[in-house]
Image 1 (tube, helix red, strand yellow):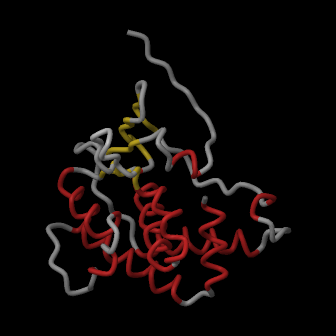
Image 2 (spheres, rainbow, N blue to C red):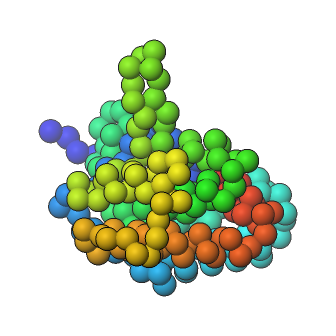
Length: 192
């Protein structure tokens, strides 16, 4: 059996496309990014866009988000060995932007899941599936349409991972609600 290592740089629109269906193996640690980690990512992105020498998104330099290590055979199925904290937080960020930018919701939705096709008998396929313990929770409250509107700080959680998912989602929603619609749109455009 030959194993090969391949390293490439990809933009987010390639990562969150039909080319990848990420899954977090159960042996990986649960989602654990804190509010501080989440705020650093958001602040870095907003600062990078704000300090860019151009206002044209397509002329901005790329922002390096770090590496993702995968086990990937032919096809989109990809097991995440490293990078799940960033992938999960980026998914949350995109879901919050979809929630706060209803006029762009259909465009952003494509980064969260591939819509199924009833004629072909294919269901919706989410771009990221968390560990078994958190997968359904993440789909219902983050990735699915209207899920973020169901979140509250009074929810009951099965584990700390679910609590962090909700805490970070509400943090991003609050922070992004306090910037202009133009800035939110600019962030969504830059990420895409």
